[in-house]
Image 1: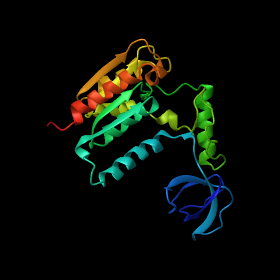
Image 2: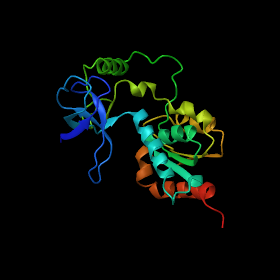
Image 3: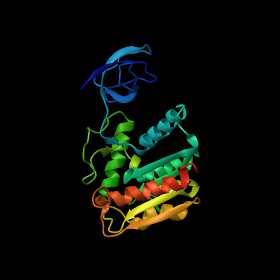
Image 4: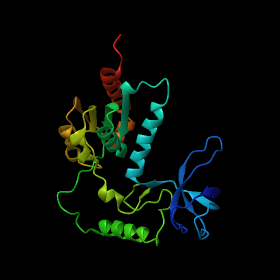
Length: 248
């Protein structure tokens, strides 16, 4: 649903151009929005009708949210920043590797059934998918295309379309070389969405801090949320207790 928002443009904004909107309403927070109509000329602040952007995939924006959450938590009097742990599953299993590798405040992570892409050994093959993502990025950069529709499916059965070609530049596994936080990687033995050796196992091998690699036998990717949920939760709790719990 469109809403109204006070905007101070840093550049000339057009319909489809995104920006951030802050509100003071209870329960509201800053969010990325897109103009629903043309902006007036000039640099003066103006009130515009905007539409919040939801249901798209931008991994760089997502990890920035993780960093922001940690910064916010650091201002909480009851937060012990010496005992900070992160847990990520599936796509966010790569996010926790990226964040912990870049923020030394993170002391331990659990990355389960993770998708942790690596830098390609060569330029990506010009498949129809790669060409489509490059084309979207070009059209967005030229103001000819806006953000994807909420929860749009452009890549297989993935819910939420990637923004431009950002997935082609998202290589969180390269950050694992700098991972010194205690890291537990949990994978499904019969993982069907990715190759464990190229994702979780590779990040495990690259990490230099305390680490453990656990395989849950007999399950596929989504079994981590079903029949193996209790086992995965126990592994995570035991890991955090080992590295974050205060000795009595």
